[in-house]
Length: 147
Image 1 (cartoon, rainbow, N blue to C red):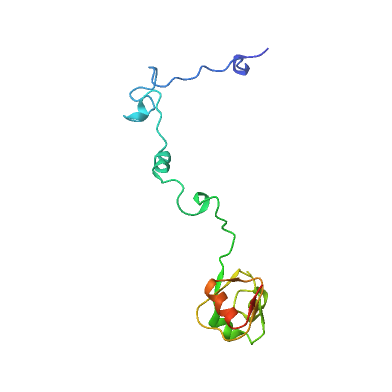
Image 2 (cartoon, rainbow, N blue to C red):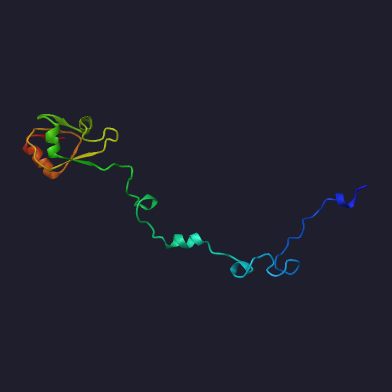
């Protein structure tokens, strides 16, 4: 025959309601005064107030304009003086050749733009390179071509 100490409980115990009399006394396990001691206590999340004060859509990252492509490299400006020093008359100028000569990074191969700083006396043929208006005039005046 089974004894009382081996019986299993068939139902769950009634949940204890804190602060409703009983054996808890004084603060009923709720600590001290204030919002935390009250019934239905709900503290507003502190981080929410901080986040709400931050300005929206400024700067870089996910707040940057959707039309901006961050992976696209900026063009490297190369002056006419630099072309004068790097190339002989009649030479062909392209991004690949500029990288071989060490004028731009061969690893990243950024886009190149020739700017009209300085003067050019050699006849050069440019291919696949952006050219400013003043540089275009100087290159064509020297007898060069731009493709």
